[in-house]
Image 1 (tube, rainbow, N blue to C red):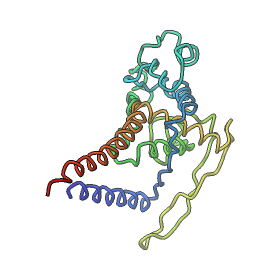
Image 2 (cartoon, rainbow, N blue to C red):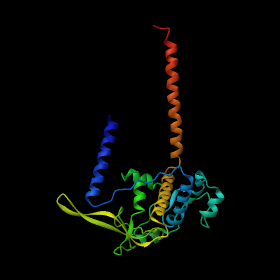
Image 3 (cartoon, rainbow, N blue to C red):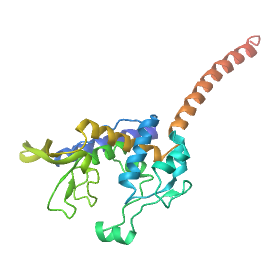
Image 4 (cartoon, rainbow, N blue to C red):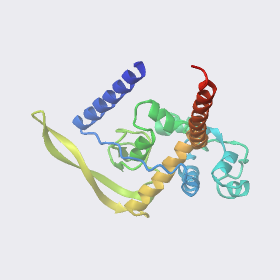
Length: 254
């Protein structure tokens, strides 16, 4: 009963938070495609992570050689994902100096090993939904030091490192009446300059990156789910066998 009560309260809290976001002109989080079982997507996500994220963000709890779990060989890791001074058994450490990062961004960029799980624990959807939305909702804002802002994370300190792929965009708002007051609600995007990828291609790349971040946060998750399914199947069959054995044992006793 207590568990059911917690689930109900959690659901009501999520509805309340979504309502507050909508009332404040915020955006709803998009559903992130789940590609954590797709090795090709995870390998592409790892490539994107190393090329675009690892310059500033570390993944200090993930070793390069763990990428063999998603189908890469150590040679492929060395040839395509390692910096010249790194070794395949080392953890993924950012190239940026912490002092420079603090001077440029106002703080040291967070470690991303557990970012998907931490966002989920913070109540930001599944974590993946938040990251998928966040990485796709950057826009030009000349009032900011970096020249960028984000609808999912207003006043964000991180610039849009993937802007060449997505291009430059501006959000479009429309005015609506809410509780007797006029508020601005996000209604879409206006493309300012094109990127090297189409909108669909960019969304697919971000889906791969987010799936990799999900996998990195808990590499054994899919294995645990598969093993759990077999365990439940075994328990179901064992219950049937135990039930029939029990019936056979007590059939002559009245």
